[in-house]
Length: 114
Length: 111
Image (cartoon, rainbow over all chains, first blue to last red; front, side, top):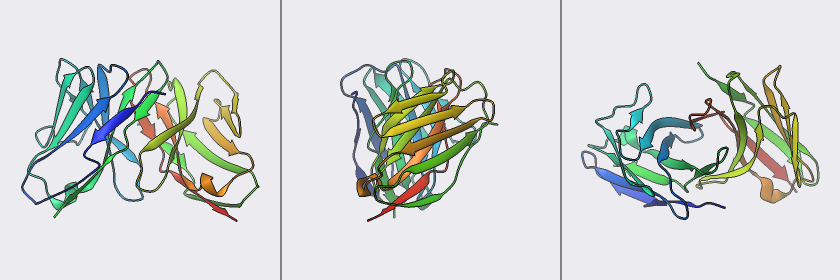
């Protein structure tokens, strides 16, 4: 099946710094990708839709200036957490649609802000 | 708004069947999904069902959909210890590609 990768798998950063997370579709093209975050023992919450060639669209309550999304190519979307704070510590997961009904998820990135 | 509800925990014995239930609210959902998440890992798509279907079977997995009651279930036959994980039900938001997830059901399989 289709594969989506994320890099890095784990990252620890200091409060106030920025961190970039990459999401790649390895064997298919994706004009749209989605970014979710998951707090411990909780469900996935959709943060934003990454659109190739245009601006990302953000869900209500998600700060677009804090979570910068760039869909650089048909196989790559990046999420940059700017001026990270401890409350941004979470598990960030991206997904990309395959065929009409399939959504493929990356393995996730565990962000810890100290 | 859209909402997906699941029971939080299910414990079964190895070899028994597991049934995980889910209710959803968005009647425009095109597809409904079941994902499996093991500790510290991403989501693995187990199966999906199109909204105009009542049932789908895939090896040990059986999905039942009651569209009138907006109720979805996942039955795992002959549950194994390797099936221990968190199972998420998700509904699609129309044809947007966005998914709304339930809280996840932790399945514990006792030997």
